Length: 593
Image (cartoon, rainbow, N blue to C red; front, side, top):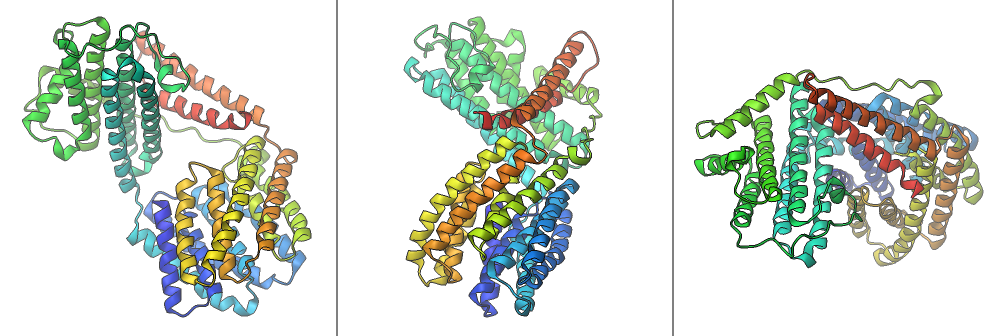
């Protein structure tokens, strides 16, 4: 959605500027400004997005004005650029708005350097920026709107689809032959991981996408309950298929050995197996259907039958392991019911069985016991211990080195080294992460230069063909960013090659210079990260490991207290905090591996 929104904003800006008869240089400036004005804003509430966008316009006008006025003042211009970079990074301490305004200021100053704006051309460029921001606003608020409620609704649908996908894999696991088990287990692990990712994405949107904190806390518990119940059903099915007991590690470690098979395959015509297959398909149907599809007695009958497996008297005659699977189906059906109640409120209870009534009463009692969620902890670090302050000093030093080195390489295009130094610090927290990001950007840039050479030759003087490819590459940048930073850098560099073609400054020497400036910028960023207030990877990993163990201690202590008769505690909330800490630790160890 971010890619579509950005592409639409750029396209609308180009159309408006073309109607006004703008030259190619200002088309390029407008496209780059529209891109920045769209992707920089990350606030979740619509009102906050509007305020930030409104504040971003004067920031952008001030940045390009100073860029034009300092165009011929080398020392003053470089000093201001370093100060701007420091301020842009330091502003991150003020949340999403500060981050957005700092990014807009930096990137629009970069635009003024890229197109070589002078004081005489400033009025025309200022009008171009106004049009770009206006087009970005139109797209953001009317064409591709983004509201917390809408995004949460999409994520809820995605989560339901992921649960249904995992249940479908459970059905495959039930019927898989021994030689198919490894493949089905790989699918089970992949779908389990994707379900987990969907749950975490919902958690990040709950506070802004729901009407109050109590609703957010309730929905978080229901989502986690559904995730855990569905995952546990897979473990129980593995236990039924094997002689040894499986555990959750089997579903999460790619190389975890599969327990020894107890039999060649589940007896297909065994009454318990037939019933199990039928009820897994019924669970899949129950999960797949939306709330509007759940009217009628047939669905209620299926739901009641599955919830009945939570009662020992309703379990079919089978082995203990197979009976555990039926219990797991009952718990999964209960989690679906809880999710429906949290999302859609009270439902028709006329067809309820005693088992269904008991499940509803359990949810009501749980909601009362867990009312009043704890407030999240605030970061109390100050001064140079604050990550944003440390990063501001690091990137200021790195940018100074990049400017000095870049001037030796090229007096006209030194700013590429500064841009690389800037981006390798984004979303990084240790020296190791900066090194990894620096070399991935260099790899992507080298490949992008090769693509740029080919594309520039194909495009030639066809301006709108080049802009069409640019829009395609912008979308590809957003689409590939979560998958591969090197791939994203490839599309960025290929796009820049097309922009150079449009500005009639394309040459093989320019693209080779781009590689040299990128390598220089990455090296300057790494040097600054290693020498200026460094955060060593092993120390950060140790800190995060300590956080994981602390969260684990809290979960275990609360579990023991509750099992010992203590008050009810939001164990799912605590376990989700542990889960988040574990993901942070996993990310921090990547440079070590």
